[in-house]
Length: 214
Ligand code: C5P
Image (cartoon, rainbow, N blue to C red; front, side, top):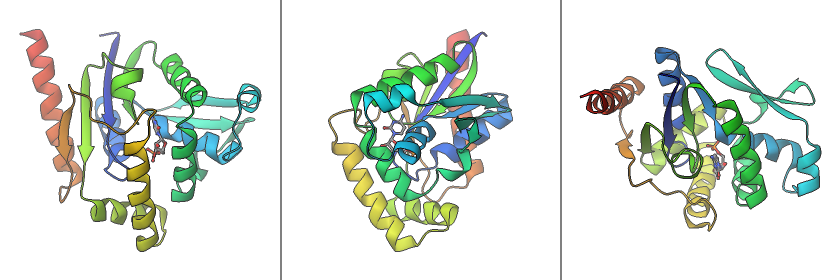
């Protein structure tokens, strides 16, 4: 098997990255978090992104173990990208066509051969329409906010407010809106442990794999 792609999408805080990391780790896949690239652009360029700045940017993605690290001018910035404030700027600049082209190319360049779990908007529709397995995670708004606040150490009410706004913006935007691909499997993570969600997704993977080989 030269190439196998699992895509994971869903709203902010639905558990995309957590489950993608676990799937990659337990099955020897590489996890690519495409949102991290938008976040890196937001962190480095803020809202003032233009074609020239993007062309001159020295942003590199490097595979490290089961995941990717983001470097800017040779410096590892991966751990500085998690705040909701950066998430909101990322969501804004992710609406610009040439920014999406830049990120999509970076992701495709990394995934020529190998086994990958990729999470992020439109990875199951635009970047990898022929992905082997597509998962769409959903979860109750409050639970998503709780998870994010726990992860980032930010205030729950503030995170709730920002996520609600981001959900609306992500769903209503014209370019790459938050939508479930027709052929994706929806998995509701509300009230479920990470192991439960993992097992559910592995069950789906197995069914797809068995169907293909029967
Ligand atoms: O998933 P994460 O919260 O890191 O993504 C930050 C924002 O980047 C999302 O709210 C979304 O608007 C945008 N994004 C996107 N396409 C992707 C990944 C993320 O538009 N493939």
